[in-house]
Figure 1 (spheres, one colour):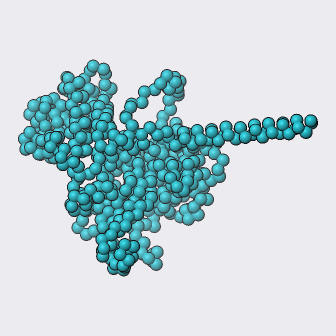
Figure 2: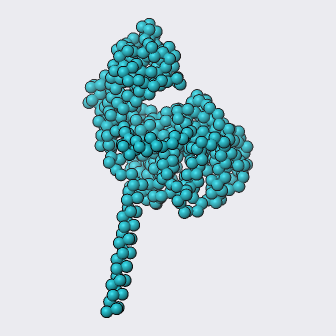
Figure 3: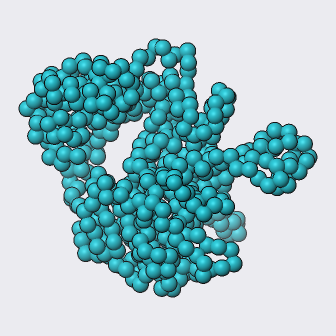
Length: 549
């Protein structure tokens, strides 16, 4: 990516890279084309599942080979071309045109730079057109209130003018306090999690006002305050470690621990010390960020009855080996292949299922799918294999796993699988991609953190790749080094956990945020208590007057 992006001046050409002088002079025409592409793409995805409407939208085709695979549009003329056969790049070279745009993503390619470049105004134009189209078509029209860019009012403008600007980089190392690399890697992933960051930096939990003992939310508040400060020296999370030891005895001591085990324990501790934490319909920050619904469908092999159950999930643990086999000889492991195996039907034993419909004990097929996707998806690759009854035989699976910078989770959802079954197609997640319900943005996720494990099971070391302000960094305890997405994606043999965040977050229309509801309810209760106290005081005065009479 070109880092020398320039600001866009009103009425001037778009500033993208050093080759701006050969950019199309009619900037308005470029913006119109980007808006049209953003709107067309959402309408295409929405109508794909409706055969009666498919003919209304024609796919852009390459002018040379008529291919519709990854089409690009020239920003200088109406030409279109494919990418895999280099027809668009050949067009740019033959005509001395310099810029083209990916029809489906809005990404701009500069031929002179021979690279994809970023331009803020163009990206914003494409994004606004995409969001606007989503609000018109499909489920977004009913489930989402209209998008409005934030414009500060007079009070907010005054606050912004008097506010003191402070660097909020969160690029600070964490001291190793004695085999605590597992904790440091997970905490760095927490620090770049956009939902956790916004929650704790907006003072939703203040450790100075909290009266709970051993409160993990207080430790998170301290951690964010320290890491997003001007101090660049490595920070030692000693109080966080001590609180964890007191809350989870199994993690206490200086022995090596599992990062995923600490991750789950930290989520449970944050949940239990959060405001709004309840057993039913919990609205705490942990459940609002990580919780999805996992659906389990069991089909009786005798009568065909399907029993469905749903359970909450905080993460997805993926097998790297087939059950009963020694590995994946000759096959490449990817995040997508692990998810396909995770959602494939699994045959239960011959007498493992007692059907409530036919009352018979028979064989059955069980399949898992994602009924509700969480805002943040966390994946764990099961690299540590423990054999039952023999702890000494534990070993680490060193197989490399490819994972993408962005992923579409639609093929693995319960709704998409139900649509494929209704259409009589194969149940594989990659089939019938045109029948996926709703716009693709409902299911798209971007990578923002990766936890890696280097070494063997008994003497390993944890590190973390994390994205901060569109830049990638590698965190190795107190050492922080600038990295790249390429280096992050190349950590295939070491990747242990990876975290993705939704590109477009879901929200309910015209609903007051839960913390405001809780605050207003508390104010009402406080007024009621004051009225009761006043009434009791008046009764005492009346009783005193009656006693004197």
